[in-house]
Amino acid sequence: MSKTAQSVWTNCLSFIADNISPQAFKTWFEPIQAVKLTDNALSIQVPSKFFYEWLEEHYVKLLKVSLTKELGENAKLVYVIKMENTYGNKQPFTEKIPSSNRSQVKSQEVDVPTKNKNPELRNPFVIPGIRNVKIESQLNPNYSFDNFLEGDSNRLARSAGLAVANKPGGTSFNPLLIFGGVGLGKTHLAHAIGVEIKDKYPEKTVLYISAEKFTQQYIESVKKNNRNDFIHFYQIMDVLVVDDIQFLSGKSGTQDVFFHIFNHLHQNGKQVILTSDKAPVDMIDIEQRLLSRFKWGLSAELQHPDFETRVSIIKNKLYRDGVDMPEDIVEFLANNIKTNIRELEGAIISLIAHSSFNRREITIDLARKIVDNYVKHTKREVSIDYIQKVVSDYFQMDVDTLQSKTRKRHIVQARQLAMFFAKKFTKASLASIGSQIGRRDHATVLHACKTVDNLTSTDKQFRKYVEDLNKKLTL
Image 1 (cartoon, rainbow, N blue to C red):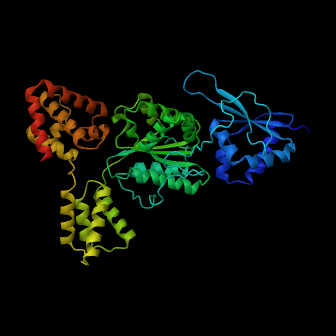
Image 2 (cartoon, one colour):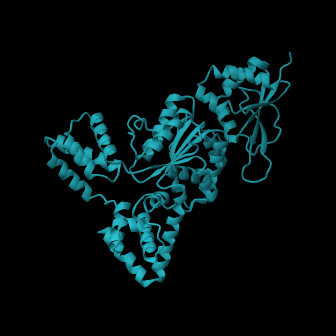
Image 3 (cartoon, rainbow, N blue to C red):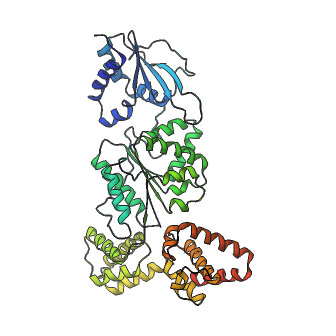
């Protein structure tokens, strides 16, 4: 039976798979395709120049042994580099390069000469924060679903996260965008999803990265003229977690490259998980084509935890630290620190530390001292409810009137001012603000904010309303 390129390569792959880790095989050998077999020369197609360089540096001996077993001592190997050009209508770049290590695998004549006979070997993983051949996930194992407590404020996001972890890339939650204010657990949940996926699917390549670091890496790749290598690196991920995606705001080059990476991953059934401090509709200076993709899946908001959830968080933290605390002190903490989970846990740590170092029992007086000191140095949160009350009182009406459907001018203006200050002083999304101020939609809130800006610059009396209310809300 005559040998074909495919049959020879299939046998080579079988041998190679027995001699390297499954992760390395999946990363470096699964993307390769057999092209043709001419005499004793096997041509294989690889997706980029760095792929060829990496194989030559790290796996040429293994390739030699596997090829020799199939084709004998005179075996030759030719790489065909075919890299799709997704940035225009040019034909895919194709180049053929023989194996450069003559003592390991004999090479045939060069079909298309390369510029450098001995190209510099470049490790695609030498990107800041990613150093090893094995792609480290950069996940924090301490962030898990076990210590991400469920409550009304996070139920949708947590449930969606679990669904994604059970079936990455196989749910309608792709991408999954988790958004909310500072310290509400976005990063924790993103890591928890990644950790769970790695636990259930150890063969999958999962990577967590902040949008800031992603941007730095992209700038570096442009400087070093290896932008395509950078793109390909991210395109081989099975699960990509990008934290604080709003950091891409105004960075058109980084947005463009992320757009192409996102498209590739999404089209190939890979999972994308994003976090942001605001909903897609509220993001500024992000290209519309990117925003539309953020909306393809599910945007789940993390809200401020209610009293019951805050109590559960405190008790869970105390249990993990092996500390007992009276119920009245737990409730005191939950009642007095409402801003976010990070500050709540910080206050607990401070309380335990003061108690341990000073050998004092945890009492309500000690808790009050810690809370007073803590809250004093924490910017007070202004809630949407509080804003509505202040605005209603200022215009001498009740909150129900403010929220009503009436179109009377002074009531409409009061409502618009409430929406304006809610956007200014809270981290709530436009949709959330509209929902809480008379069940309006996000477009109404956006219109209200623009109206307030316009009237402030053209109407002296209206400008006084804004100044007075601003003082009341920042006292």
